Length: 214
Ligand SMILES: O=C(NC/C=C/[C@H]1O[C@@H](n2cnc(C(F)(F)F)c2)[C@H](O)[C@@H]1O)c1cc([N+](=O)[O-])cc(O)c1O
Ligand SMILES: [Mg+2]
Image (cartoon, rainbow, N blue to C red; front, side, top):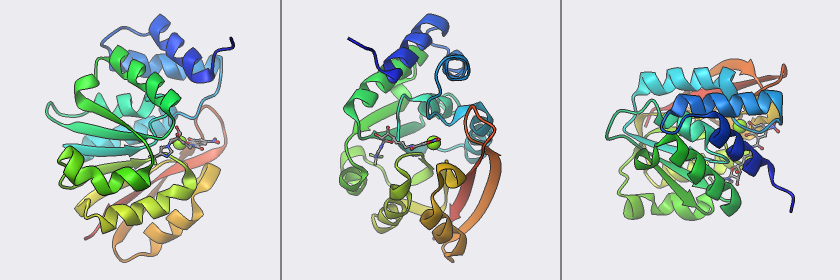
């Protein structure tokens, strides 16, 4: 039976990356996507912007919306201080299965919790199920029409605090116009655009970094 792209991406990690070495996992995925098959990872150019934001925030509690194969999950977790944790939401069980194996290859299982299911269901349960008070950093990289409703849900569930950073991928391509309009015009956010390129291409894309003001 034909393999899927996430399965081929996982095999590239297992073949080319060193077990327990997160940066080699990131590099193996980027090489696979540049040389073999494009895949919707944040990629290395936007990934460097992600790295700088994570290092600046030094978060203890991170939420990622959209695990896919775990590329950005591994990239973020590799920069977290010892007791810090990342909860990553993934809707598709097949992708979650692949991501868990990519995360295991990187040796980051202890820092990462992959949660399967829809954001509308899980965000309201974050406090009671995972003992989360508020998130220090939220990385949005899931369905683009869910960025805005899920941001409002995070606000309503009291999961954002003064200073929480929201970092959103693909605000230009594929684009998240309603989310951009909201975070750029709401008095509750201070927003900044980091211009870059769509992963593994020359097309413009960028990350929007928004600070929740409370
Ligand atoms: O569509 C794109 N990304 C959609 C990404 C979607 C991923 O987020 C998961 N998800 C859905 N809901 C949840 C949650 F969290 F709610 F549970 C998690 C989906 O199952 C999928 O794995 C995309 C497309 C392009 N492109 O160039 O077309 C480039 C990119 O960087 C992209 O991220
Ligand atoms: Mg993306």
